[in-house]
Length: 378
Image 1 (cartoon, one colour):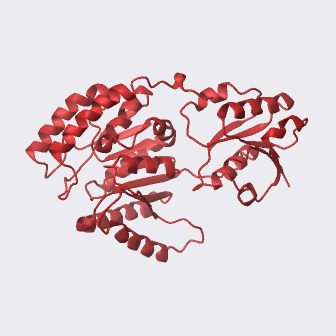
Image 2 (cartoon, helix red, strand yellow):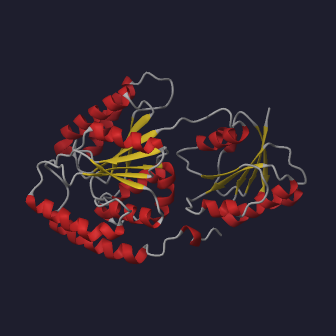
């Protein structure tokens, strides 16, 4: 049986014995690092609170065995992982993982990747994230959209999962979602714990921003698609977005409905026009519309954006994402999509437009100094 060396300060209280069951574990307190004079284990897990301590321990072990394969486990997400790796000595493989209790198997997946990279342990997967808020009165539209998405997944993207993120609804939205999930779970015939529909629920309404952050924090996927729940978009455009992201060149694909939306009032068209003028300097090259409710990002992009996003930006979370993407030089594509502006929108055109202007000013001050080379990894 292969052995795994684990050096930990026990602060994360990770239940290694129940996660890594196929290997023999040698668990050592990080305070006893001086007692290690030889490393025979093919993989070393380093689980300590401070990143700088993790780097120091890794380098001390690499002085003993330069080819040691190391998995560094952090409690947070850092956009400066490349800087961490530049400070690590030796020539063994090094991986960095953010510990998430909702995804304990990530540790085992990474260990197996280090031990046996010739055997892929995880397929590329897709998450379709649907923010919802007080959708009871128009849940029929939500239901119809989910049926279309399930058809798309069954026919073309069997490795995809749909996630509702409930933005603190005050009505019976969550009960209706739970009924959908109950039916889904009853109909599932697989022996795994995989379900095509899943849900997360926020305690308070965040005007959309919190749903994006919850999705980015809690959901693990190679491609993430964020889409409005009200059956506004065609599944063909969603498929097109997934296919473009799967090619790997673009980090972000942003839908735009400004020239294709139907049922849109003249007032909304005018406001959209002026928003485009105001926000164009804040957007990545080639992007002129950030507010359409359909966009996709890849895993690397989501990991880098998350530390800079704020849950108090409300409906302008899309703009904040694009502004940060521009600062970090991500490749972005604007994709024209078909859209129907459905009745029952939660957008207050005047009030939300004023709030949008305030967020623009905030973005220019809070995030103006973003740079990957300036991140503190201590």
